Image 1 (cartoon, rainbow, N blue to C red):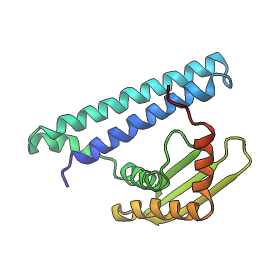
Image 2 (image 1 turned 90 degrees about the horizontal axis):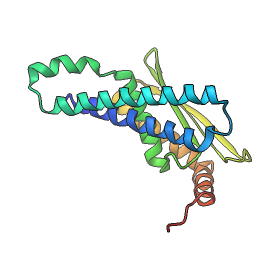
Image 3 (image 1 turned 90 degrees about the vertical axis):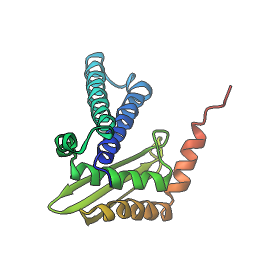
Image 4 (image 1 turned 180 degrees about the vertical axis):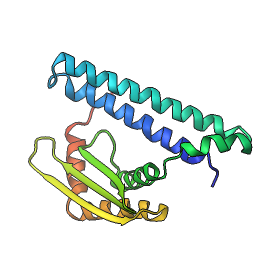
Amino acid sequence: MQSWRPILAAGGVLVALAIALGAFDAHGLHNRLSPDRLQLYETAVRYHFYNALGILAIGVAARSIDAAALRWVVPLDDSEARLATTAERALLRRLEGGCQVPLGALATVREGTLTLAVSVCALDGSRHLSTRGHAPALPDEAAALGTRIAEELIKRGAGELMAREREARAVEEP
């Protein structure tokens, strides 16, 4: 695997997260936060977005530099963050989740164990599914953990729950 790919992947995930946070702000926080708290949140999202773009730029630049220069960039790769995002992305891919569904996932690495905690809920609070799984903190195990947790949630009805939420909030094309 080329060593610039994890940097591009991390940058892409961070940019996607910044966009999701911005969408959450635009669609969910304006009526819930005081103006000063809203300003603080918007500033944090903006800074996150700038940092994500910087990491993405480093990854793009690393694609075209020689091996000697790449040695300076490789230390920026955070293997624990890569494992966590790999598990989360595998889960989202299997559940066909995104920013349009009420789904939260958090993967963490501690003492050689990758833990993925997930919740799917109805926006009105009428239904809530949560689960957690563990795997060794290894690259091959991260994606498998995300897929395994997704399959468990699908068996418990997450697919139908998410489909209902998508349908309820579908926007008609003009």
